[in-house]
Structures are given as structure tokens and as C-alpha cells.
Length: 485
Image 1 (cartoon, rainbow, N blue to C red):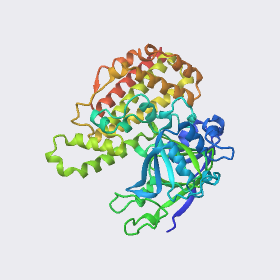
Image 2 (cartoon, rainbow, N blue to C red):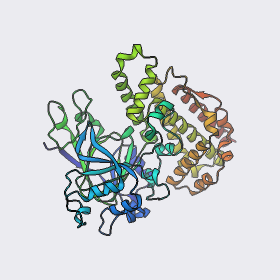
Image 3 (cartoon, helix red, strand yellow):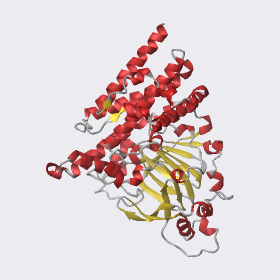
């Protein structure tokens, strides 16, 4: 069965693309794009160490330098439920497996390996940065630096519930920065990314073919019950099981070595390695796609709740069970999400007050950062209002986000400084960057306006909305007094 490919993904020169343009044209509109030129500009170490002079993956470098690392390797010829069958093995064993794959460059260039292994290995989701933080393989491009997900996980655990943490240690202590390595012919089945986050994927070497489906058409790749998604769009897909599949209109692109692709929220995609390939991938979200994350959590929560509805009357903590299942299946639950947006509420408010406190009404030069912080707070408030309207966390008064304790946590200070430096950098305001780098805890945290509202504990989305409204109203009032004076 042929698929209906009707368009190409746009390619732009990253050296000529400002952050503001990228945010307006792609993040805000939720459109994909291929960005060229950035990897050369940033002089990534990975592009030297990981690539042979012929432009092929230097698998032997990985074997000799990182060979003992345990990684997940998918067999691209073996389906297991909705994904490919995976096996844990060392990087050295993965390289040996690659040597046996007929047609791969690494096998063709090695005279000592002549056997043919019919399985196609694909190393996926390697938390390389977490495992080798000192190696500095690459620098995250400025366009993708406003990353609340990984910034949060660099400082805090995702799950607030100790039982969930115990059962999901890998999820709790991990990040969403990955290295992928696959031989020619390896591929990834049709999917949308975790949390409906954004992702960026850079080809250190090799070539990929991407097939994309706009979120407005995502229902076309699901069955009649909207439960199961098409696994491989190039298979013979049953008309009776997936009645809308033939109507789907696909976009495609070929991603070359040195190019970075931006995958927006909710876009289903299938990816094929046309050559032996190494790529670096990040999943992330921020104010622009926060609603996508919440909507996914809500949908998955409703499904989890429906699945166990028959035991509701005999379960002592039915809501708690729903949330534990949500965390296990999705990687985050309502409690985790609410805690995260509460931390970023306080961080954005702290930075907003800090900038206004330093520059007062003469803040024309810092207005772009202040505007960005205001936009962040508006996005959080919008999502908190949606949570309130859905009665999320009602009856869960054991969950307390203590703003005073957050305020005094040195990890939160680090999060604030890193967030501030990010906005100073992407908006090209070096004086603010210097301010944030020099700031002490007392400089950033001794803010009388903010402290007036940190004594309260936040139980519900309504509490968070009130907290934002009170601080912003007071800060704007103070700003107007200074301006009128």
C-alpha cells in the first residue's frame, strides 16, 4: 500500500535564524523545520571523535572509550507490542553486532567479519550526557535551550511519590537527552514523542528519512476505537481496522549529516536510517507547548481511570492508584506536573522581580526578557486554569507545594540562575547574563514583594493561579509607582 506524500519539510539556515524568529515561525505555530549550519558553527566534539575520515560512524571509538556502558538495543525486525523488541547489552557487544550486519558500512570496511546476522540493531535512548557529563560531546543550540524538562530533572526528581520513585528508578533519576546509533536499514516505528514534548534531533553522521503527519490528522492512524496506532506505515494496513489511514497526507524530508530537525508537539513520525547513522536527540518542553503536555496527561489519565473503573468501589485509594498508573505508563502524573509548573512559576516570578528590581522603569534594554517571563507565567496560568476546570488534584490535600521551602532550596537557586542565563543568552543581553552569573542567593532571593506571598502552601491549581495574580499585580503596581514618580 502506498502512502500519500504531499509535501516537504522546510529547510532553513540556522546561522540566519534568530531565537525570536524560530519561536514565532516554528514553536508558536507548532511546525517542523530542518535547521542547517548550526553544528558546524558550534564545533561539536562529537563530529570529530565519533566520525571516521570517510564520514561514517566511528563505532570502534565507542567500543574503546565507552564499551562497558549498558544500553538498550532494538531489533528492528522484531515487533514487541507497540515497539520493537529491545535487549540490554554493552556498547562493545552492540558494535560487534553491527559488524555482522550485511550492507552496513562498518561491516563492509572490516575484512575480519564475514558472517551475516539478519537482525538489524539500533541503539536507542542512551542517556549519554547523564553517564558522561565531563565528556562535553556537544553544545545544545541556542534555539533549543529553553528546556524546562531537562533543567528540572538536572536538579529534582520527576516523581514526588516515594512509592512511584521506588518502582520507576530509571524514570526518576533520568533526563531526556539521548544518543542513537543505527546501521543502514534501522528504523523507528510510527509514534508521537513522550509527553507530546518538542524534540530536536541532530545527525552527527549518516542520513535519515522522516515521514510526518500533522496533529490534525493523527486520528487517521488509529483504529476505530482510537486505542491502537499503525505500527509501520509501509506495511499493508487493514482498511477495516484503520479505516482512515488512506486519507492521511504525509510530509517528508531527508536529513543529511550536520542537519538538525525540529519535531513539534503531537506530530506522528516514522524515521528510517538510509545510512549508518549517529544522532543526538533531546525531548523538551517550555511555555510554548505546556498545554500539549497537560492535554496528554489528561487523556492518559482518563484512559487509566476507565481501565480500572470496575474496582473503584473496593479500592481504598482509587485516585492514588490512577495517578500511580499514570506515572508508570506516561512517565509523569498530575502531582508531578503540578509540582514542576509550581517550581517554574516561582522561578519566573523571581527572575521577573529581580530584573524589575535592578532596572526599574528604565528597563527598555531588558524588556525582551521580561516579556518572555510574562509569557511564561501566562502559559502556566492558562494550564493551571484548565487543571482547575477539570477538578485536577481535588481532594488531594496531602500534596503541598511549600513556596517557602522551595525559595530556600539551593537547588532551586541553581534552577533560577540557569533559567535566567538561558533567557539572557537567547535574547542576546550580555549584561543580564553577567548579572545572573554574579548573583548570590541573597541577591536573587531577597525580594520583599515575592516573600510576601511565599508563606502560603499551594494545594490546588486555584492556589497557584492566585499566587501568580497576587505577585504580578503587586509587581506591576510597584513598577507603575516608580514610573509615575
